[in-house]
Length: 337
Image (cartoon, one colour):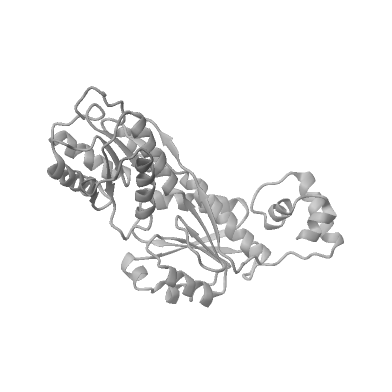
C-alpha cells in the first residue's frame, strides 16, 4: 500500500479508502490510485465467498434495546453502501455467557465478524478470533486482544463532562444510578464521575451509588434506595445509567415530593425516543450510535480487504454530546442544599 501511495502521489489513508471501498472518494482520487495500482501490478484481494465484496456477520444478543438497534442500523447502512451483505446471528444472554458463540459461529461462512454484545468475555473473543481466523471487530467495548479491533464510546469522558456540568449548576452532592456490574461500561462511567468530583475536592459517596436493572423499574428502586438512606440530606444531582432508569427515578422523586429540576437535576446516558417525552424532558449524554456502527463496519471492511489483521490490538473511542433539556437546572446557592 505504501508503494501505491508513493506511485499515485497520495497518502496511504487515501489508498486505503479507495481499495477497501469503505468510504466514498472523488473520481480523481479513485483514478489516481487505481492507475498506480495497475502500473505496479496490484490485484485486489477477493472475498473468500462467491461474489465481491463479501459477507459480514453481526453477532448480538436476542435481548434487543435502543442502543443495539441504533448501532446495528449504522453497521447495516454503511455496509450496504459498499455492497457488503450483513448476516445477523443472535444468541440468548445465557448462551453467550456460557461461551457457546464459538461453536455457533464456526458453522457460518463469513469474511469477517462484528461483535455487538457487552457480555462477551475477553477469553471468548480471543478464542473466537483464533479459531475462526477471520477479522473481528468489537463494538462498544475496548479490548486488548491481538488481531482484534474495537470501537467504543468514551464513557469516562462522557460521565466526567456530565458531572462537570452539574457542578456548574451549583450541585455538589451527586449520585449515580448504576446498572449491574455485568454491564461492561459501568466502571468507566463511575471513574469519570469520580475524576470530576475529585478535581473539586468532592467525592462520590457510597450512599450515593445505587445499583438497579437498566429499566424504569430498576431506576425507581435504585432512586428510592438512595432517598431512603439520605433524606433529607439527599443528592441534588443524579447521573442515570440510561434514560429508562431516569424515567423510574423521576417517578420516585415525585413520590418523595421532590421537583425536577428545582430540587434535583437528572442527566441520563442515551437518547431514546422516550427521553424527550418524560416530564420534564431529560437532559442526556447522547453517543452517536449509528456513527459508532458505521465506524465498526469501516474497520472490519479494511481488515478484510487489506488483509490487515494486525498483531497489536487497535482501539478507537468516540465522544458523546450533552443535549440540554429541562431535567437540569441551577440549584439556588441560598438553599441549605
